[in-house]
Length: 313
Image (cartoon, rainbow, N blue to C red; front, top):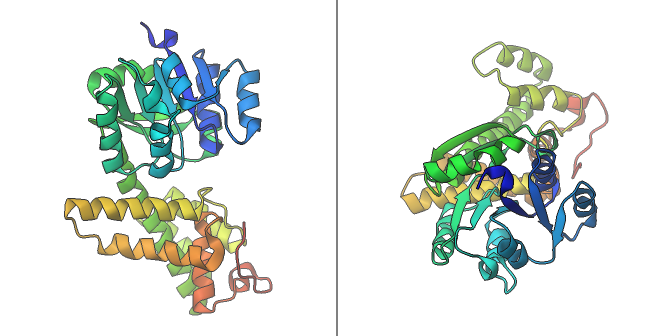
C-alpha cells in the first residue's frame, strides 16, 4: 500500500499538532482527528476534509498510522493506557508516531507494549515553533528502522523542511533532549550575560554588536538580544515551563546513563527558579526578566523605560 493510501489518525491538534495535521491534509492524506477540548482546531480540520474520531482507541482501530502530538510523557502515556486509549485499539501492523518530546525510557516501554500487539512505535519529535508547523517547515528527528522510516517519509515531508533519520526506536527522543539542552542552555547563558551586563552598566546593544561579530553569532542570539533590548521577550515562542520539563527529561536521561550532568542540572534549576517567580507561562526569553528580578536590575535598564518586573506574557 502506498503512503498516500494509508489511513492516518491524529491525537493532539493543539498549537503544533494543528499545523502538522493541516499540512497532512493539504498534501492529500486521509486524516481522522481525535476530538480535542478546544473545538476550534478540530472544527477547522474537519472543514478541510478530516474525519473525527471520538476516542484514541477508535483512531487506532480504524487507521494504519496514528500520529501523537502532546506535551510530554505523562500525556502520551495517558493516551496509550486509558480504557479507550491507543492500546485498546492497537492492531497488527499499526504504526504510532510520537511527535511529542517524551522521555526515552517511556518511549521504549510503550514500544514494547505495542509490539505485543504486532504494532510499532516510532519517535519523531519536532523542533521549531507553531509558526513553522502551520507553514509545513518543521524539523524532525526520527527513531525507526530503515524500512519503517521509508514508509513514513512522504508523511514526514508533508509537514517538515528537514527530516533526519537518526537511528533505531528511541533515538529520536534521545537526540531531541540533547538538542533542547543545548538550545535552552544557550538561552540561559544569554539571559545571565544580559543581566550581568546591565548591572555592570554595559550598553547591551554594544554587547550584542561585539558577540554577533564573533564565533557565537547565531539565530538564537539574533532572536533573543535585539528583542530584549526593545523590551520584547517573545523571540523564541516556546513556553518556559515546557523548557523546564525538557531539561528535567534530559537530566533524568543523563542520570539513567550514568553520565555527569552538572551543567544540565544548573540550567534546569535556572528554569525552575524562573517558573517559581511566575514566568512559567511566558516564553523562554523571559529568563532575562527572571534573572533581572533576582539580581535587582530594573528591566527599564534594558528598555529605556520605567522598571517592569513580573510575569510578562
